[in-house]
Image (spheres, rainbow, N blue to C red):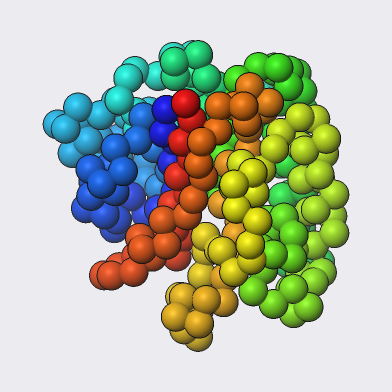
Length: 255
């Protein structure tokens, strides 16, 4: 099984790149974030014409998540429990071949001194509560997406400069640690120990060219998925070329 997570930063802008990525990597499931389009306007026909199944959960201009899969999704969940109809569209989950795949777009947080940061922490608390209520660490679960958190110093190009800021704040690290304590493992770090390996680079100030990045796109797996994990890597080349997303896809392979 191959899973890919990618913050595409507008599915309509990146449509041809997504189609090319599907052909190049041939995943079983592609989990997208920041699709930035309502469900009715998602370009599903372009994918369905090539045999892909499409599940979406979107809104205009901001946020939005989607699942593209070879096989039909089972038991699809959209949003967190308790969300009202005006809530941000940030989560979609489904089962594929017995594996629960949870695609999450965690709020950015903007600045630790703002209500946006409080909202981010609260959203993560609700996500963790859902995990604790619906699953056990013995279930085959993969939680992946744009977490907007760099887990440790290896995941930040300049830890001293980022310390205490959004994406690298102690409160973010504390709640992320609770996901690990519950039973998730960071599958990228299961295979890659080095630093300088990032999944996001600012469009400005030659961020990509200078490799001034962050690893904020994560693939977390429970023990049954860790046992099946064969590889997890960042497709850095997808950040190159014309009109790239500011994020690169993360690819995870399981036996």
